Image (cartoon, rainbow, N blue to C red):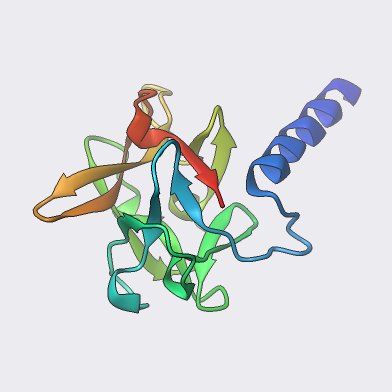
Length: 156
């Protein structure tokens, strides 16, 4: 039991170290792709249900700030969260802003610089926050964790 508690505390400390804040103070943070000046951005500041976030040059605007509480990245005072569309774990799935409901498709853990969904998958390979070029924009998606640079994140 002590080992389990110790491991849980260590995992929580890793998340806090990655995010730079505790849930108690849950300060807004930017989510930046590691190694480049691109941040998760709500396009045109359109904080509406169903909007797909994009990558955009980091500028620290309100449309690049997220609160991290209870494993969820949220905006609009916790009204909308980063959500894996319909909880799909196969293939490439859009990540959208959706009403926060604390479901597994909205909860993320930090592991090895990746943001991994807690959604269970049939093959036990976790799903990670990723990005994909779609037309003129690079949009957020979720797909199996593969260690590529598009799945490496840090906060700013």
